[in-house]
Image (cartoon, rainbow, N blue to C red; front, side):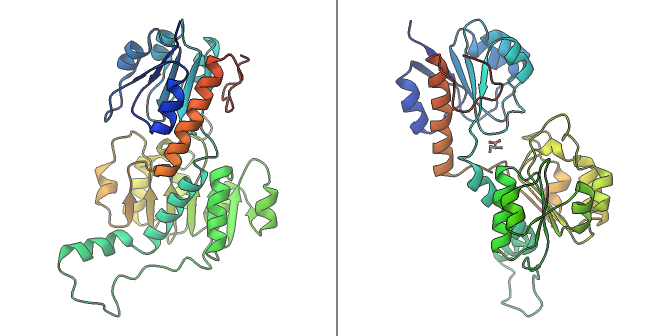
Amino acid sequence: MPKTIYVTQPIPESGLEMLRTAGEVRVGPAGRTATPEELAAQVRGVDAVLCFVGEPIDATVLEAAAPTCRVVANYGVGTDNIDIPTATRLGIQVTNTPDVLTDATADLAFTLLLAVARDLAGAARLAASGTWTGVAPMQLFGHDVAGRTLGIVGAGRIGAAVARRGMGFDMPVVYTSRKGQAALDKAGATRLSLGELLERADFVSLHVALTPETRGLIGADELARMKRSAYLINTSRGQVVDEAALIRALRDGSIAGAGLDVFAREPHIPPELLAMPNVVCLPHVGSATHETRSRMAVVAARNVIACLRGEAPPNPVNGLST
Ligand code: DGY
C-alpha cells in the first residue's frame, strides 16, 4: 500500500519533493491555522503528518491519526503545540527541526534588539510620514549597544548564537542555563541566576522552550527586577511572558521597551502592545528566511521518511523506539 503523508500547510518544494518519493503527499490549505477538529478530520487514515509550530496537535488530532500514523514531524524546533505524552502513549513518533534555524532565529532576536535600541520603528514612521524636515542634531536618539549588558535567558543553541552576536557588538554577556556553557564561559560570558541577570542586563533576550516550568517565567516580579532602562526581547514563545504584566510594566515605565516576535495567543497581538511607540511587534518570523525554511522542510521530510521506513528519525523528540 502506498503511504499517505499529510502536510498541514504548504512548505518549500525542497521538502515536498523528498516526501513524494516516499508516498502520496496531500497538502492542506494555506493561510489559516486549522482547528483541532479540522485537523482531526484531515489526518484520519494517514501514515505521517508534517505540521507547523502554531498548529494544535492535541489528543483529538492524535487519536484520529493513531490507528495508521507513525510520525508527527514538526516543521520547527519548538514542540509545545503537540501533546507529546499522548503521542507517546499512542506510539506516534514526534520529531522537530533543530540546528537549521538557529542562525535565522538568532539574527531576528538581534535585529529586534537593535530595532528597539535605535527606535527603528519611530524613525521609519517619521520617514514615511512626509513630515520629516531634515537631519537634525537632537532628533530620534536611540541608545548604543556596545558596552551595554546582554542577558540571555536560556543559553541553548539559539541563546548561545545570540550571545555570540552580542559579543561581536562589544556587549558584555550574562546568561542563565541549567548547566554551564563552556564555550560561552571561555568567550567571557558569565552565568548568573535569573534574578541576578534581570537586575544586571540592559537587554534581556528569552530563549527557553515553552514547558510547564517556563510558562509565565517572566511575570510582574521578574519585570520589576529589570532596570527601568532595560529592554525585553522575546523570540521564544509568547506564553513564557505574562503578557498582562508586560503591558503594565511598559505602561508604567518600569522597563524601557520590548521587541516581540511571539505572543501568548497567536495570532492575537494585544492592541496595547501594537500602540506603544517603544515596542516592536513582529508576526512570529524567527525562522522565516528562504534558506532556513527550505532547510527546515528537508529536515522535516527526512524525519518523516525515516519513520515510514521503520528507521530511527534523525531528530526524535519523544524517543520512541521504531
Ligand atoms: C520554531 O521553530 O519553534 C520557531 O518558532 C518557528 O519560527
